[in-house]
Image (tube, rainbow, N blue to C red; front, top):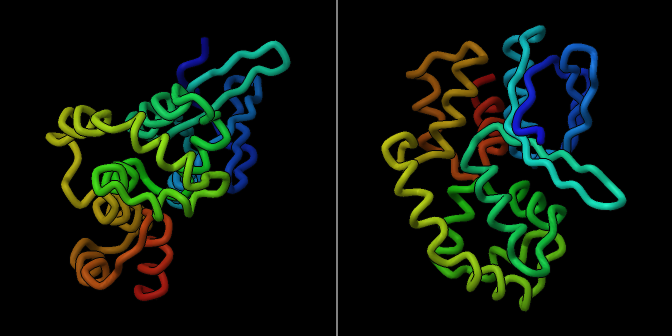
Length: 195
């Protein structure tokens, strides 16, 4: 079973990556948020090897590989695909629309309308996900609390911007005035303002 890969990125699309691991090239499906994080790493260190965490799904007709930059995203994916009627495609769509911490807030707030914004999820599906996943994030976030600051999106965006060479003081001033649902959108908006 493949649980992680370390190698050179040879192709990076919005939700798909090809990674060369010692001459073997793996095709890995990822969320939009995860590929944005990879893009930021590549931009700051073009020839560096990257490491991704993987979940492998083996079916009669396919061997599928899903990649993540953070353990919390992988755990969320694995919990989502246990829900009857939620496949890997929908799980990746959720993680492309929202980061795990933002998704956890949507579940905590029982915000069905926000969940319905994810492609492929209707009212019935959103309600089912809400019921099935209630309580999962409480445990997961408690275990992560000591590691992840409460304002996780802006923290991640700040790290990404620092890796691009911006100063911490500049970043903090800009981030104070930005509200966006994902790290990639915060970074894009911050780059416009910092330029």
